[in-house]
Image 1: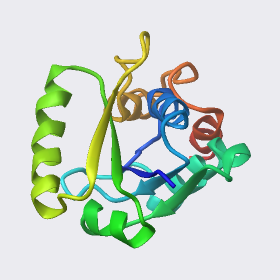
Image 2: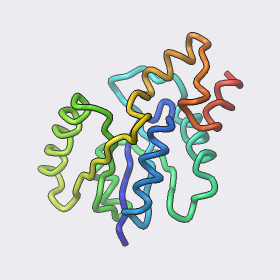
Image 3: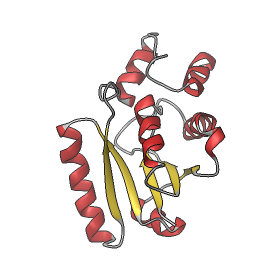
Image 4: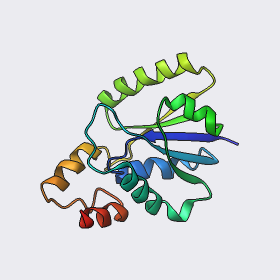
Length: 157
């Protein structure tokens, strides 16, 4: 069974993230969306809120997509769930340089775990969680940028 871990803070999950998962389902039998906390960023949504939004967004796909919290090294989590792949999305050249460095270090830590990059689909590469958070904070409309589950959570805040 080909299992991938899609790690991130997903603060919040965006349509670009959801697109990566949808496309990755053609490559992997199971995908764990591993929701962690980015220690270099101040979170907008709590981990519990992020987990709830993502679970709702993928509620109809629980046979292939599992949403779970995680902490620590991604490669350690991969070993825990039997994944041999780390799934990452890339929007631009800057993402590539950042993601490449992480992938190379992960390869040193776990040579048996491969990182797979998917490039953002056309029309989605401009979407980032950071920008979405700024729009939300400033009371802008993010309805074309995020799944409905995020919009519901925003309305409750």
